[in-house]
Image (cartoon, rainbow, N blue to C red; front, top):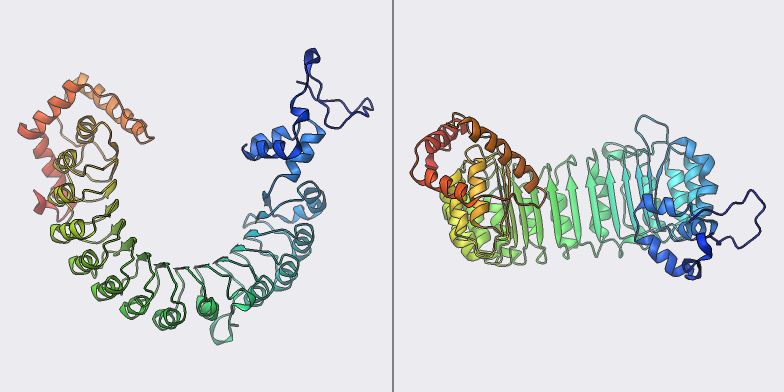
Length: 505
């Protein structure tokens, strides 16, 4: 196939493509709509290449492209008309600028809004030349906007209120480092405006005065998801008002937030809550978690990062086990559960399919054995920075009948041989290991080469492939694991250096 030449004054059909050997061009008979469907199945790079085939393909590819991402430096302004003449059906637009460069200005954004009146999603990143006035004009022209994401921009509360008043279909709002919001009592409150009924998701990140969004959250009657990350101020009182007015919340994320048990008690009034993330909220204790578990019985996903404060322990986890039978996913980071709470979770939450235990000083071989015996529905298990050894891997070989994936990271006493044996014993199980090889292991020169091969195989196995393992080698390892002393002694030496983990021997 060759491209048609326009230099010779070809006045033929702009879709004509010259086919060697006078073969019929069946693609040229394909309707534009079908050709557009083919383009939509291709990657962005392949679509660009296809647009060079002929003028018809160029036209169809441009008219069928609904998603566009542009480098929003100020030089873009001179090309806006030509870009959106070709891509006149864009509904999802991302404008991203380098933080060290000058971005497009209000005039450019307004021009884009005039050419993209069907826009439903807009993402702005580091567009620091945009002001409240420009955002206001944009919102007047793009009233069908459903999703707005802004990061590191300089406009403020006035611009946000323009969007909320002019875009009644807005469903999702994500704000990160909005620099134009004034500080203290002078901050203009941001209300829901015309989007009060349509908003479903609000995400606020790294806002110095994020509480000026309080009226927006409280007024979003049908809000389902609330995510608050690293926003300053005391959020307990505001959460009390939010939980009283917005009772339909299904998902809540609280990360590095000044919130304590009164805030969690308030959230427990959201009886439809299914997903809760408590990440580095050191003032939250067992009491707050117990209140959540006693009232939010639909809880499906629970993530807790205890930040090594040890204020959430067996007591809170046992309450979850007792009251949340629908729990399917549990992630514990910096929390120290024992066999007591893990056994309760296994028996009380029989739908538990995904479990992650990270940075715990109490999760050792005994706790892993407890999980293996009792978590019959478990499909995915992640263990990171815990005092677990090869004996824990052996326990997994005979338990958790539905287990399909085990990920072990930074567990110093788990060796590549332990993971290798587990993989050989349960061939259907994907085992991903990220751990250093134990020191002082006696091995001949040939064994050293084999160890290097094991490391290479494990790296490949991390990409959904299992290395081929000779049965004789796995049998030899199992015998050494059960009867040999050199490997066990080395394992215990590694445990002793882990700190506070020798209790699990």
